[in-house]
Amino acid sequence: MGNNSTALPLVLLAEQFARLPGIGMKSAQRLAYHVMSMTDKEAQDFADAIIRAHSTVKCCAECQNLTENEYCPICSNDLRDHSTICVVETPKDISAFERTNEYKGVYHVLHGLISPLDGITPDKIRVKELLARVQQGSVEEVIMATNPTVEGEATAMYISKLLKPLGVKVTRLAFGLPVGGTLEYADEVTLFKALENRNEI
Image 1 (cartoon, rainbow, N blue to C red):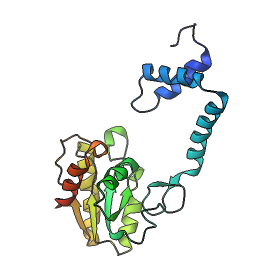
Image 2: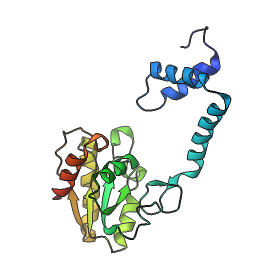
Image 3: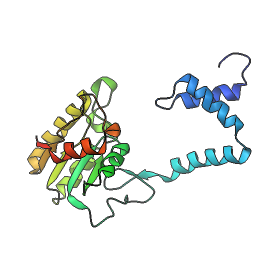
Image 4: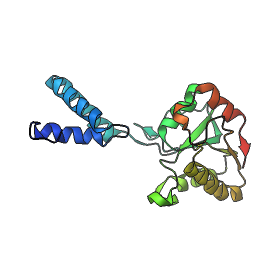
């Protein structure tokens, strides 16, 4: 798309789409051309939605999930079991657990996994926020629900070592998932079984 027959603004737009995860250059080009087929109002609404989401959505003060308010709807819900925290890598993983309709506790989003090779050290994810929650004393169990990958396992073990001295029970999902799989794409039954049969670590 970078040839002289394509308008530069269109090339730049496609390059922005290509920066999104899972979008290759061909898909990015298709999206850029689709934007050009929009009316001015549709294009403005699309741009406004991006700006609005980016400026108004922030991390929940408690669990680090994405929310418009200081606390997300799950943390604000008194009917949830606040003594059980399920630790996940991304906000998308919360959606996967909520689809099971079985988990009644709350969550903590790390926003990444420890991966020294990629320069992601423990201080770059939300570990200290989790420790602060547990140190308040009302938490009884922390479920490590990071993906069954090398980084996910390393992160779970690292955090469990920090939590053990705090006298909290730390468990790990009993994965009926393939190693290297991701929670986001797990079906509800598999995810519920992984949660139900979790093991202490």
